Each structure stands twice: as C-alpha cells, then as structure tokens.
Amino acid sequence: MSDTYPIRPVTGEEFETWARVVSDTYGEDRTEEDLAVERSATELERTLAAFDEGRIIGGTAACTRVLTVPGAVLPTAGITWVGVTPTHRRRGVLTCLMRRQLTDLYEGGGEPIAALRPSEAPIYGRYGYGPASRGALLRCEKRSMAFLPGTDFGDGRIRLLERDEARPLVEEVYERVRPGAVGWPDRPGNCWDIRLADGPQDRQGATALRHAVHRESGGRADGYALYRIKDGHGDGGRAVQVVELVAVTRRAYAALWRFLAGIDLVPWIEYEGAADEALPYLLADPRAVRAHEVDRLWVRLVDVARALAGRRYALPLEVVLDVRDDFCPWNTGRLRLWAETGTAGCERTAAAPDLRLTPAELGAAFLGGTTLETLARAGRVEELRPGALARASAAFRGAGEPFCPGGPAFPAF
Ligand SMILES: CC(=O)SCCNC(=O)CCNC(=O)[C@H](O)C(C)(C)COP(=O)(O)OP(=O)(O)OC[C@H]1O[C@@H](n2cnc3c(N)ncnc32)[C@H](O)[C@@H]1OP(=O)(O)O
Image (tube, rainbow, N blue to C red):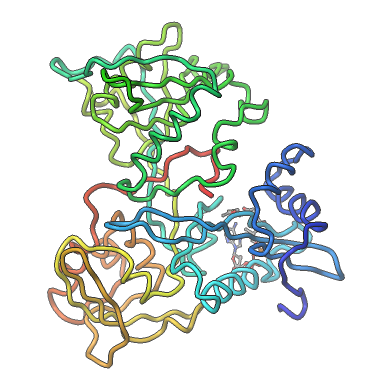
C-alpha cells in the first residue's frame, strides 16, 4: 500500500496544499491568515503526506509536546492534522500513515507515547490507541445555582482584562497548574495565539472572548475564566460559554464560578469540564449541573516498556504483562513492570505472565482514569494469576480523573 501511495514529510512549498487537503476533510476552509499561523506551528519534518500520482491525498503530523501523566511529565507526540481526501477513503491510506508515523517515532527513539483527540471514536482503537481521558459537557441553569452556605470564596478580586493584559497572567496560571494536572499538555510556540484567537470562525456566532482574571488578596493572579456569550436561538436561552477555566486554589475556583453564575441576562452556563468537575459539589443542588460525558484524549504507548517506566504508580507493584501488539510488533512480548514509591521500571522477561492485554488497554489506563478492572469486565484484559488484576488496576489508578483542558473546539495539540 505504501508503494501504491508513497508517504513522506511535506516540504515548505507543499505545506499549503497539504494543509488544505487535510482541513478540507474536516469540512473547513482555511484563509491565508489561518495557514500562516498553522505553518508557524507545524514541524515540517514531523508531517507525513500520502501521494497518488504526485498529488497529496492525505496526511498527519506530530507535535513535540510534554503531557502530565501520573507522577511525571512525559515527552509526548501530539498527533494532529489527520485526514484522507474523500476520493481515496477506505483504501487503507490512514492505516499506512499511522503505521509509518508510529514506526518513525519508535525507530527514531522519539516520544514513548502518542496522544490525540479523535474526531470519531471508532477510528483509532485499531492502531492501539485507548480512550484515556474524558470530559464532561456541563450545562447549568444559573437560577438553580445556589452556592452552599459557608462556601469559601476567599477575598481575591476578579477583573475583566483585554487580551494583551490578560495573556501573561493566563499563561502563568496555566503553567502553575499544568505540572500537577494529569492529562494537561504544555502549550509552546503559538499555542496561546490559537487559544486566545478571536476571529469570526473562533466565535461561531458568539461574542468576543472575555478574559476574567482572579487575583488573590496578595495580588498574584491565581485563576482565570475565558468565556463568550452565546445567543440562544432555538435552544432555550442565551448561555455563558466558558471555553476554559483554570484555578490554582479552591477559593479562586469557587470565586470564578460565582462570578460566572452572576452574569446578568444570560440564563445558562455551558462548559466542558473534567469528568470529576468539582462545580456540582459547590452547589446546594448538584443536579443544577447536567453533565454529558465525552471521550477526549486517546493515548498510544509507542514503546510500551519506556512508557510504563515513565509514569509513577499509586501502589508498589510487580506484575508480568503479556503484551500482544499486532500493529507495532516490536512491543509484543512479556514485560516485567515494577514500581515503588517515586520510581518504576519495565523490562523484558521470560517469567510467567500475570495479565494479558494489548497497548490499547494500557493506553486507556495510562493516565489513571480508565481502569484495568473495567477493561477486564469488557473482556479486554485477561487475568492469568489471581489477584494480579486488582493490584495492577489500583496501582495504575490516579488520584483524580485525567482531563485535557480546552473544550471541544480547541485542538489538544
Ligand atoms: C487527531 C485527528 O486529527 S482526528 C481527525 C480525523 N480526520 C477526520 O475525521 C476527517 C474525515 N475523515 C477522514 O479523513 C478519513 O475518513 C479518515 C482519516 C478518518 C480515515 O481514512 P481512511 O484512509 O479512509 O482509513 P482507512 O482506509 O485506512 O481505514 C482503516 C479502517 O478504519 C475504518 N475507519 C476509517 N475511518 C472510520 C470512521 N470514521 N469510522 C469508523 N471506521 C472508520 C475503515 O472502515 C477501515 O476498517 P477495516 O480495516 O476494517 O476495513
């Protein structure tokens, strides 16, 4: 297949055509301005294009990122720009692109994990990605949002700032939270330009972006909410559309939600939060927050041994994994994973296996959200030594639900 459709990175001259072919598969048009921003964010040597008779028919790209994982911050290939033109779908082009991308990563000694946010959930499991973090689409009717008596809102202050004034404060707050927040990627290069972009296509009919910054009483910024007001044509009312809310302290978190709930003339709030978002527990009526769960970050262990040794575990652990990886055969074999407080290792072994599974299950459990026990109940993890599953499942589990901030419209990478 890769002979039928040769695959290679694109050159600077080819970037625009490549970007238009891929963005067209999302049903989007790109302006010259969009392409210039995207060009500056794209590492050309990490792009791939598939060609048919010299024409680009599909592509993908990897971004050099780090991701917070349980107990560590791990180099991660952020996978993006995935698309195959409609004239060439279902001929295996994506499969070839994915195989080449993962092989390049492994052989180049690159990041031990890859992560992406799929447009559709059935696409990436076959390539060994597993659903590792979830988001919750929250919708709250503001008149039902009575805060519990005694809620500590602190004595900080919230100010609405212009973008240029808000930006350094927002970036600083994000960076204070990120290293301890599992599932959060770094935002190098022009990621913040994209996050704070406010053109008509970013607004999608809503107002300009508002930047509410919370400062603690000492004056240091410790929280922010980025939001728009969305018109409610036909769907029951106008809404405060929170596109990102980050708080260093619980007081800043509570104060920002009280602020948002207090915006007049807008009866609803919408927000994509974490699967274990604290907001409902601030309220006398937690049902005022209606949640619809969605899968978000999918993780692929490119090099299973390096990846498993790269995170930390909730309990001391000693387990032999029998890994079968049909898509990336270098991972197939038995691995002994051990963990103690603050350290972990993983190496090949000939010992009898305790659990049998594939990288898709390890990817799903990697951030500590999806549990191995849940996957075993679905028949996807086989326990070969009694007791091994419960122990490994508990050790992989994180303190909270992993979350990838940014909301549905913001690319993770
Ligand atoms: C991280 C991101 O960027 S996510 C964005 C992904 N891109 C898009 O959604 C854009 C629109 N879609 C597309 O461009 C294409 O349909 C792609 C990229 C999803 C798939 O490309 P294709 O070249 O058609 O995939 P390919 O032929 O390799 O398919 C491999 C298998 O996946 C299946 N598959 C591919 N896409 C889908 C899908 N959307 N839903 C369900 N199954 C799918 C195929 O049926 C095939 O199954 P089989 O092996 O059992 O026959």
